Length: 170
Image (cartoon, rainbow, N blue to C red; front, side, top):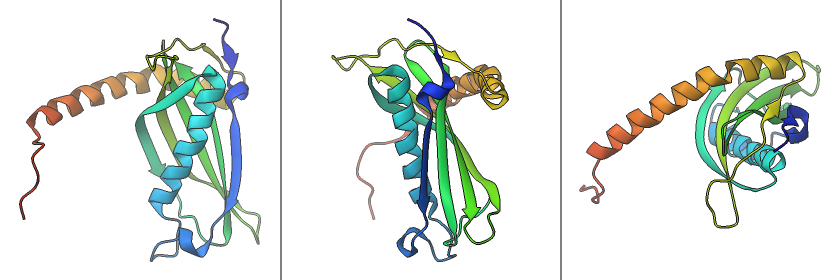
């Protein structure tokens, strides 16, 4: 399977912040941002693999600066690294003050998706070819993040073995 450049999976979406998108601090709801992050990342994964994809994990979402109603929000995502059926997707969130034009990185996120075949089993995905300096840096550092993901998943499974599934009692 022929590897693909990161730009082939790139998604860019810009939106406004409306009153129903903000919390009591008059900043964008974190949950709203996370939903948008998952949406654009899922498109990047599908573009890269040209298959149905499922979110395997949201590896990290780092909120760096608040996003206000006077801002636009630009989500940029692309596949940075692949395993055999999994894809790491990076999402950069840029807030732009629509009056001043000032732009800042408001958040970053890494998610993992798995491509599925027609039987809903993991499917092989193409490799990634980074071209820009940003893409190269993210690709070079991906194995370290993959190792941390594996360790975190192992700890989550250990914890899950101790958790109960019964209904909580008041």
